[in-house]
Image 1 (cartoon, rainbow, N blue to C red):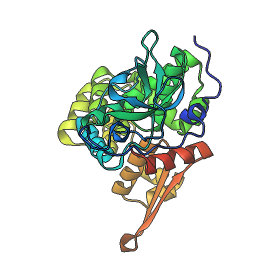
Image 2: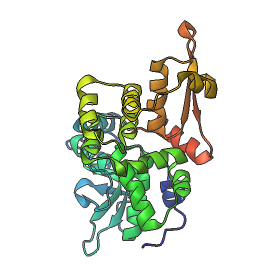
Image 3: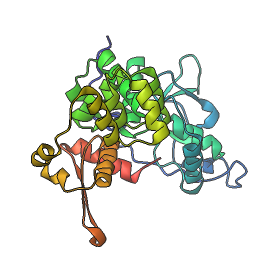
Length: 316
């Protein structure tokens, strides 16, 4: 079992320190301004060593510790358009490849690297760090989770790897990735889902709420197909599962237990659930008709607040 690297408690922030986001100029290969204007800032050092560098696209290669298994083509195209217009704001994190001078393995930022190629950029900003295999695995997982680049199954597997290989507790995971403990626990429970349900989760045909309702059900696969074909909501699935088990939900008792939820319609509660699952934090929507309303996101630490702000400001 690998010893957990001290100092990674806040994910990449502890690794890259005060390195500021870098805006890479949006230029194409035939740009007349020369090689310094092709995807990374002229001031960045492209020589050997560690730190912030300008690296050529062909100097980089995907690493073996990438928890992300699926790269959506439409999202890559959109990201490429953003790079072509505004440049790359966040440098990749890479490490030198042993025995291959001037070659680097991507630890965090493979999606940005792929999009940069689509945008026909010649180079990208990258932070070079001499990470060990265990450190590379840990940083790669944490960075992807914090950037919301993983589907629920990938995120679940990433958490399990951090627990198995770095002895994290669920509480420590929540602090590191800026999620609630209940979110961590719910994601880890996905290991109990059937392969068919997990596949539909990866494809986006099922939500986390659907998958949780199906956990442990004898007819989970059949119900999953019905959810997809009939477009069943999470509440409808919960009712079906409850009926099958002989458990009838007590709406009146539920309303007394949670009066704030009782006064909201099903659509509002569904949106709250979707946002809560995506953020891993408590979400409260107070809709007031034509007057608008409020959206509250509840956090319990500054790390969680930092994570929400970063995801709102930097989607690439």
